[in-house]
Image 1 (cartoon, one colour):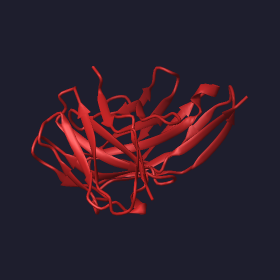
Image 2 (image 1 turned 180 degrees about the vertical axis):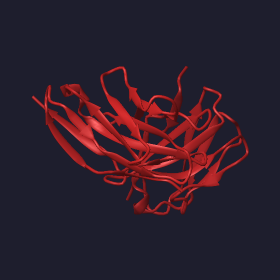
Image 3 (image 1 turned 60 degrees about the vertical axis):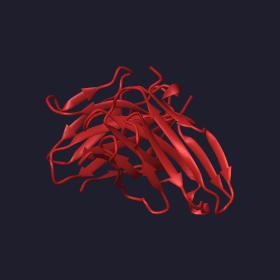
Image 4 (image 1 turned 45 degrees about the horizontal axis):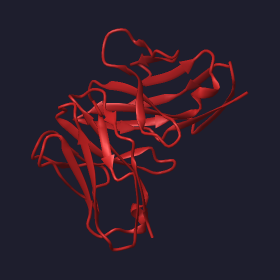
Length: 111
Length: 111
């Protein structure tokens, strides 16, 4: 099993550009999550999904959109990137209210 | 809603010395508690978890944490650290399909 994978690993954007981060899991987990990690702030939840076709807002959803068209994939979109979105983004999945499995992260820089 | 406070942002420690990382949580419902570790430039890995039962939980690499309901704490300890324990450690509490993370504690082990 690959676990949780994220694409791409690194990306540099200019202000105003758009992009999509892809998260895939092969563990048949129902729940999937997108976090951002910034120095001194831990991980903050952006959006999450409790099943295929469902999404919900987390702590810091502004400027991001998500989609869960297939159970194994969870996409995070930035429609118009801003420098404040420079961060490391982590995807995670879990079966229930239990251990979350994390991907390796995507390092995004917005200039 | 739940929240987590990690009381120390940085903990320097000498090799073979003990270490304690403090974590306090607040929640209005029954909780599951977790400690995750993040090695440099990697994703988060589960270190140990408390779901129910014995309040003392242990990891395979010598860490232990004790759930104290009256003090709403879940402190992490290791009696003798190694250089390889240098990492960032995150305490997390679950509820309502989500995890809430503390800001993290950076442990630096010196020879």
